[in-house]
Length: 156
View (cartoon, helix red, strand yellow):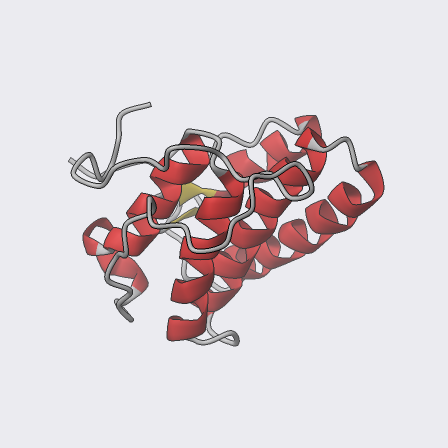
């Protein structure tokens, strides 16, 4: 997949909880500007896009960390907050699948599905179910297989 923030380097290693190396004092993850941008300006949201780069290159823990900062910034009870929380849960879900932890993975799957359905039902998606470039109906279908791609549909 094409990088969304090619000017920001990917980390030198993937942190996997319990398998090390420790995640303390990582200086190989660039600090990105976390802004409270409205969802329709998602193509200008560096933290969101860098989180997608991390996710697509299987840096799930790191994507979770980047998105979590944005989630706190936009507010937990906003539609954008629900969406970011679901992305955080999807990254954690992918980690749990990698670690072969099916019970926590299933809980995360259910929670992420609930959040994505909330966003879908909010009326804030376009006619195809797109929110911040993510085709939510497609992601919900992918979640059944465990292969959650999160492919963005970038406007021309």
